[in-house]
Length: 230
Length: 137
Image 1: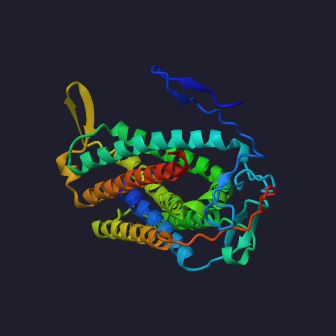
Image 2 (image 1 turned 30 degrees about the horizontal axis):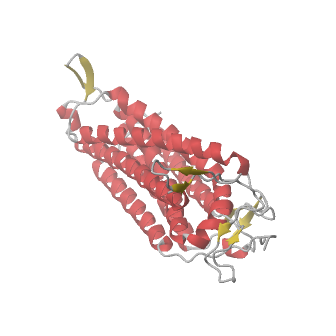
Image 3 (image 1 turned 135 degrees about the vertical axis):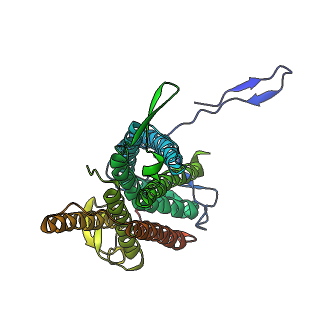
């Protein structure tokens, strides 16, 4: 369809919105890495029918949405969990139920994000990285790989935080009431036991570590996506 | 689920330390791991250098690191259980020193592993994959 032309109020002729036609045989991608005499011409790497399709390639968009939604939940839960841990380290009372809820939510969201990402990975490796990022933005491919590796070594932090949160939430030495809400906290006596203090610090390290890994990965993922999306 | 937070903390630190150490090992030594070949849609076992086609070792390295860490942590938990049964006494709690060491090892291993991959990937040269060329060219 030809591009429409419109006129401004003072009569000047301007170019109208251009209709984008997606034709997998014709639409091509500019290749600037090779001096093949066609600089500025378009090289169809992305949609070449000669490149075999990969596992779940047609499910890519749905998986990206699932991956993103899981990551949003994960960021919220992990940051809340880290804030709870900081409260515990500061010997402030917290709701014991929240330790378990955020622990489980973080771990389930983490596993969901990793699973969706793992299902997407073959498609990313061929369609995004091999055909585009390695040629045009290798830094983004490196950042993406760092993000993936960080996700793997961050998983035990989320598991560890839940392992500690379960018994920690049952250490109910005293119960206080504040503003009508039941706060199940540890007494100063219990919380000041040296070994329990170390456990609380370990919980803090695990939860803050999980939150940092999640936030780092979200920023890295957005940067990689923005290579073509922005 | 465990009822003692000290024991849980010790197992959590063992899990974290072992995962990071094994993952670190896969980053410095070309260990044979399960490889996925996305273009061929099949799995293989070996090293990336030994595969002529485009291959992915991330799944294999992750599975090995998490699997070994899970097995090691499970074995430690089992051993602690047997030890307690033989002693026929109340379960001794991990001491403050053991917990502090566990925390220190976990943090060190995690930071070391993350630093290694940041170092390896910073400025990595892309190896262009030999894919089927464009029939339109």
